[in-house]
Length: 142
Image (cartoon, rainbow, N blue to C red; front, side):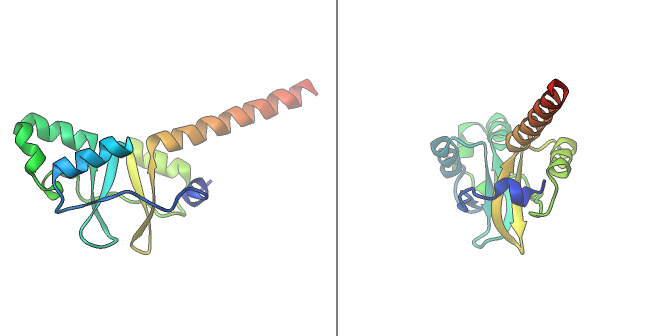
């Protein structure tokens, strides 16, 4: 299964933040939307980084509360690691595991068309394994 099929049918809206926005703005968006990360854009459609809960924690430890006044570009993880819609789910999961990341923007022709989390990919794998197990049980029982 490809990432394109996994994200098919989802809303095409991908919440993101601008590099010049403040960390306070980004934290507010994470909290309001109840999400763990945001693609960071630089005034256009191109993703230049990722702002995540981890970035908040690392910066809070080193800068304290003043970090809320920093620009997202000063705190984000950059460059962003992105995937193509044609990427297979197992490839994306392997990439996330190797790179120790939890979110991947899905880009097509330089434009973000989706955003997947490791939870999305693990859920797909679990659903697949359960369906295969049920098919085997049915086959054995018949």
